[in-house]
Amino acid sequence: MRLALVLSVTVAVLFAASLLIGPGGLGLGESLRALFTGEGGPVALVMREIRLPRAILGLLVGATLGLSGAAMQGYLRNPLAEPGLIGVTATSALGAVLALQTGLVAAFSLALPVAALAGAALSVVLVLLLAGPRGGALALILAGVAIAALAGALTSLVLNLSPNPYAASEIIYWMMGSLADRSFTHVWIAAPFIALGLAALVTLGPGLDALTLGEDAAQSMGVNIARLRLVLILGTAASVGAAVAVAGAVGFVGLVVPHILRPFVAARPSRLLWASAFGGAAMLLAADIATRLIAPERDLKLGVLTAIVGAPFFLHLIWRLRGSEA
Image 1 (cartoon, rainbow, N blue to C red):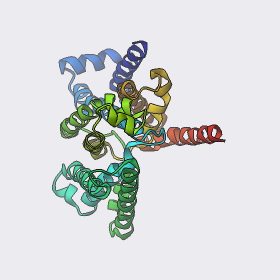
Image 2: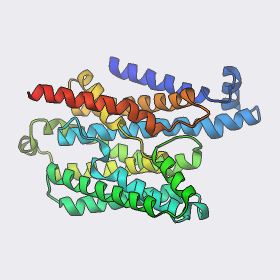
Image 3: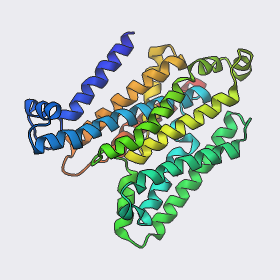
Image 4: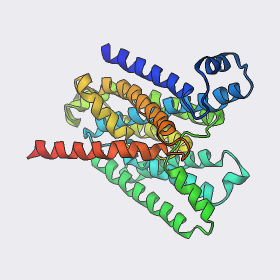
């Protein structure tokens, strides 16, 4: 109960800060009045059309990455698992890169998120085909790694063969991840898929709790492992694919947040799901605020900052696991 209160207050404070902090130097009273009344001309435009959708996407994308990371770690019973393990992030990025490279974005403004969502859907089909209807956790991991490697190679090939240096530069910057210059159009595109994905993932709690005893014990308790895996794949693909479609590739949130919060929920997967959703939202909102404060004139990318924070934590986690196995 205390953890829920702390996380809820933290997310609320960071959401408000995301609305009020920016390079415009707007006053607190002026910003709030423009946000709630719509009065103030340019100030109202900034608050309602720039900062509000950015804050909402930070909330949605962060919750998606945190929750899907906790679900993947619970299913695989491995604290090093993260949402990109089944190839969704890589294939979504490939779809977006192809949209940028082929010029579809110039002809159709929503081509990039639509192509990224199509890439996520492709990853689902390929994972299910490769892993098979009754494949276990190892088959799922191997299929995801193979798909992610292939998608990464194809993305590099597109960049390598790109005749347009401006398109290549745009691709690289998009792949770094960012919430800047997003509008409510991006919110409306991503929100339905994220909502469906999160709704599917939160139903996995009891099954993930049973899995802590092993697959045989979980099946004896009535858990349908094949159905649980299918819901996990579909929920992760829908939510993470939509998140990548609007924010680019933002790494380490789904890895770091569940591991930090696991001791506070007694390592119980069902409780870790909702805690990681709040924690992921808090981490991404905080990181997005930091990008505006650290280098507002240089457009510091969100994915770069989360990687700077997450990579040392990842190395620390590996070191601890190494020590525990010694």
